[in-house]
Amino acid sequence: MPANVEIKAKLRNREEVLETAKKLSGGNGTVLVQEDTFFNCPNGRLKLRMQTGCPGQLIFYSREDIAGPKLSQYRISKVKDVDDMKTTLEQALGIMGFAMEATSSQCFQGHSSLTRCDSSSLNVFW
Image 1 (tube, rainbow, N blue to C red):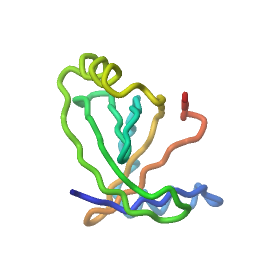
Image 2 (tube, one colour; image 1 turned 90 degrees about the vertical axis):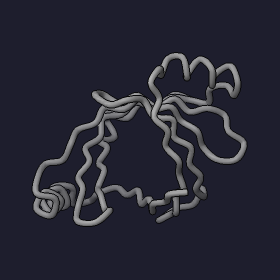
Image 3 (cartoon, rainbow, N blue to C red; image 1 turned 30 degrees about the horizontal axis):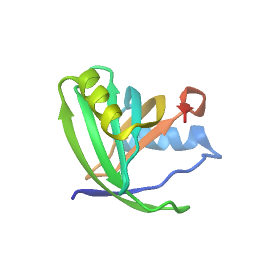
């Protein structure tokens, strides 16, 4: 399964970090508006993502619930009919919660990226 390392942090010097990210990536990044529906899943996390301008995604991932950097193993499948998939998964597994957010993502050389979420755009419903 593919994997990445997730690091979530609050920025004390937000403007400085954003300026450095802009220089390293060569731009301002891409703004993504995402709506995630989380389903009950006994051996990991399962979410259905709707994202502006992109096909739907069913994302299964597992990671430890610990502070600091953590390894996240994941599998992503494209979904053509998000509404039908949501209904099917809701009937089979039940919905655990929702998250809606606007993020900005910047990619750097190699496989590194910085994804920023302004906490004012994050709406979580459990």
